[in-house]
Amino acid sequence: MTLAPEAVVPLLRGRFGRPYLYEERCESTQLLLAADAPEGAVAVCDFQSAGRGRLGRRWEAPRGTALQLSVLLRPPADRRPAELTLVAALALAETLEEVAQVPAAIKWPNDVLVGERKVAGILGETRGEAVVLGVGLNVEQTEEELPPRTRQPPTSLRVATGHSFDRAALLASLLDRLEPRYDAWVDDGLAALRDELDARDFLRGRIVRVGELRGRAVEIGADGNLVLESGGERHAVVGGEVTYEA
Ligand code: BTN
Image (cartoon, rainbow, N blue to C red):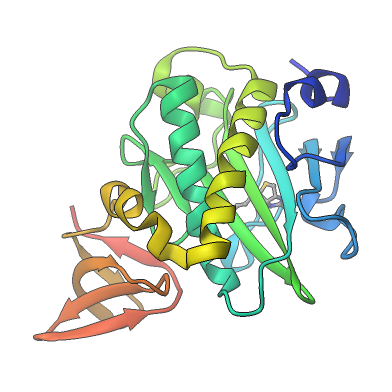
């Protein structure tokens, strides 16, 4: 099923996705949006030759199997752009539950999990005062087509459910949910999304490790940091690779 404008634009209901840029193949959708593009501009590719992941990693998916998009946002100067990965993760988790009927959790700071396996990742990059928010969602990959198993094994909607999904419908639904979530965050920060984030916080209560630090994940703080309790003290973790103990 195509993600060309004629399949997607008629499904759009809000201001996100306008303009909608589609290329069958690109280096990375993160590179397609000009810094002066209007807020809500979206770029989508069916195949990325140099898809980017977090922490300098690559993001790879066979042609036409994943939903790969970038959205240009212009958050106000008093908001922390890093929090946007959580805003997008929430919108994505809700989309998965609605469209694919699978329970979805957020693994701080940027992963969406289905059944403890990573189905999607989010990458925020700043461009001056704008933020390009990239979303990669594994949709149609078979088990063999997924990236090699890592500490957080990957999955796709197809592997998780046994069904195929219309990527255009998933995309429209995601943009439809992201827009009000983003607007609420612009107005009130993460406080506006507190309850939903808590309910989907995969790490909460687990023993986790980030760098040298090992402790119990308490919550995602109001500023988007991960709060850990270790040795009777609370620590705010700003970023990095988080692993957890089963
Ligand atoms: C991660 O899990 O490390 C983040 C992955 C983000 C991948 C998406 S796919 C669309 C957009 N374009 C990219 O090059 N990366 C993001």
